Every structure is written in structure tokens, then in C-alpha cells.
Length: 246
Image 1 (cartoon, helix red, strand yellow):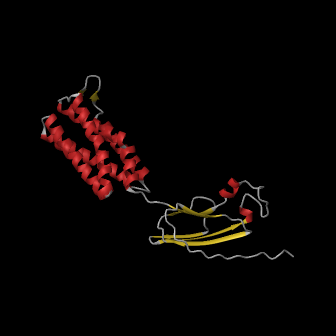
Image 2 (tube, one colour):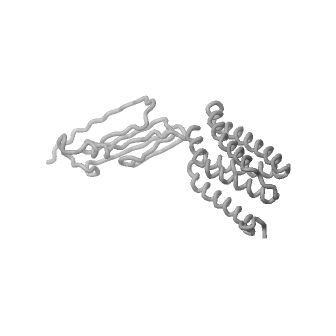
Image 3 (cartoon, helix red, strand yellow):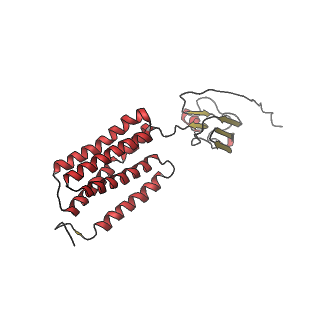
């Protein structure tokens, strides 16, 4: 007859602060863990996945069941025979995922910065070419400086009023400044208003990419493809060598 296995039941209630994860090692013949918590963003990515899990706005519940057959080491082993790294790889539990905060959102915005500054310059070039009024490189430089200061302004305001209101204020200030500057530089109020509207649409797209979590990649790919397609259609008859439309 097989020897009767010892059963140990442990009930723990923990108040966790500043902890990224809570993991367990399946060192017994059969390890069963039931866990519940009030963290609304749990992650189950390492070790063994739970056999049941329920995630709601107010917290989560999960249940694991791990047998010694599921581990990479056997049911009986001596200390030192199994490397510590192998034991750690068998750990399972929950990661307390931190939702995207305003610092991460500002970082995302900066990562897209080069692309959107390039799109802004391309928009300015098209407006300048269609009106037949070239702008000086210094004017391009001043606009580039304004586009760069936007991200610093966004970070400074986010620390005090949150990312959403900060983005709205920074984008409105930038679009208004560029519209006024372009209307004066090109001596055309219509060019300023049109450019301001285009910049508002561009930075509205940037906000969508930054705040979206589940569909950020899909939304970004579709939006950028639409922008590139629009630019190609608008410039399809442009004679780049002679800089005159056909």
C-alpha cells in the first residue's frame, strides 16, 4: 500500500503594498492554491496558469492545481540536486500589473514624436507648395522647436492636472500657435486655419495611439496607412524635379 500523504492547509490574508507579484513554489506532491484580491489588473503570465480565474472591476479570483508530474524536477529530490533557477521557473502566482499612468503615456507620446513631427513638416510643405510661397529654413526651425516643446509642456501639465486635460491644453496651445504663425508667414489666413485643423487631427490621432491599450497597434497601423495613402493621393501628380503640379 502506498503511504498516506500528509495534507497541509494554509490560510493567509496579506495586505500588500509596493509589491509587483505574489508567487508560490509547488514543492509538494500536489499543490492547490485559491487566491482572491481587490486588484483589478492581475496578470497570469509566469509558471503555471490557473485552472479557473474570474476578473472583475473590484478584484479577481483564481485557482491553481499543480501536481509533481507537471514540474521539471521529480517528486523527491535532495537540496543541491535541483538548481535554484529550475525551482524559480516552476513558481506560479499573480502579477499585480500597474495600469498605464501618465508617465508611461508621455513616454509613448515621445516615442511617436519623430513620426508626428515629420508629418507636421510634410503638411507644412504641402501648404507652402500649393500657395507658392516658400518659407525660410529659420521658420521651419522655429516650428520644429514649437513641436518639440509640446512634449515638455505635456509632461509638466500632466504632473498637476492629469494626462487627458494636459494633452488637450498642450495640443490646443500648439495648434493655435502654429495656425497663427503659418497664417502670418504665408500671408494667408485660410492657410493658417487649414494647417491648424490638420495639426489638430494629427495630434488627435496621437492621443488615440497613446491612450489605447488593447487596440493601439491596430489603430496606429490603420491610421498611419490612411495618412500615407492620403499624402500619396494628394501628391500623385506632383513633379518633384520641377516642383510644379502636372
